[in-house]
Length: 430
Image (cartoon, rainbow, N blue to C red; front, side, top):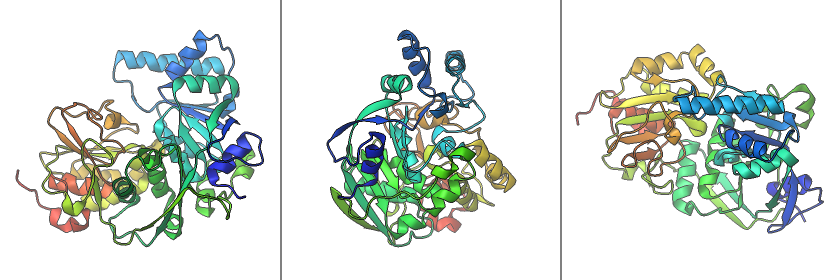
């Protein structure tokens, strides 16, 4: 019997010919990632007297949530992390000048299709965009993995999502995943694996696939896969170390794999989507949003801070101005993206329109710094979560949308349809 992508990964990692949903396996881990949570991981390792980690070459540690350090307390955390990285000789160390962890994992060659990758961040499902099994774990689990190189896991059942049709203009993969959260609920894939397949998935850019895999966890998914194809190989090869290049290849489920459920989604009539507070699944199509004024527009995050996201935002903002009562804050997902956007003139366009462009990092996405919300304020955000208090005050409201929706709304000062861009050149009175 054939296996799904998740089953194939876990079978190989546990040294078995095959596995089935519901079985428990002890899996050898291929790669791990930790951001500022590494401080707690290191603390546990120190308390347990662990002097060596299992494989310094397979560990990536990054700073992205609070960069540069906004407080003395956070500076101490960064100092402690650097101490741990040095103590254990961790080779995948990326200090301030890198970017958001999930973007950097691909850019720095830490992902190979078919690998099992664990991270101390729930959005580690992002690695499924490259055909890898990525998922988030807690700090105590990560400490165990760093000490032993393995972890027990339950084999998840898999849901196949067949995507067909062409996304309309100004409608993106972010709108698609928000639509799925509305249509199938945020509990559709609790401890299950998702496989996004079909002609639409094949046509998607790597950046668009990353957006959907990133938000797979918002549907409850343990893993969220796209098949590793030629686009995947072309993206990864320039970044992967020479000795690891032979491992970069196609990876997909067996043709006779069994799925718990199969959904078909025709994207051709999809319109922009907006998630209302305080639930990712509280989604409405843009035609049903109504009049929602916004104080801030946030473009960035591990979900939508990539070059194509900045590009579509710049195309909407070019020659226009951000509403005088709305703040537009931009965080490219990495310094590589930042520099390319700088070379291509995108940052100039955004700044001339009135945006504040910040250094790569998570910023206000998790309520960290550089753009927190005050009480009663509203933000339209390209990030992945809108829980109460997520971006600052518990009395603030966060709405989720695509980069196109964020850019158009920044001009209008309220949430608007990005497909009507020419109508947003003039300021609206409040």
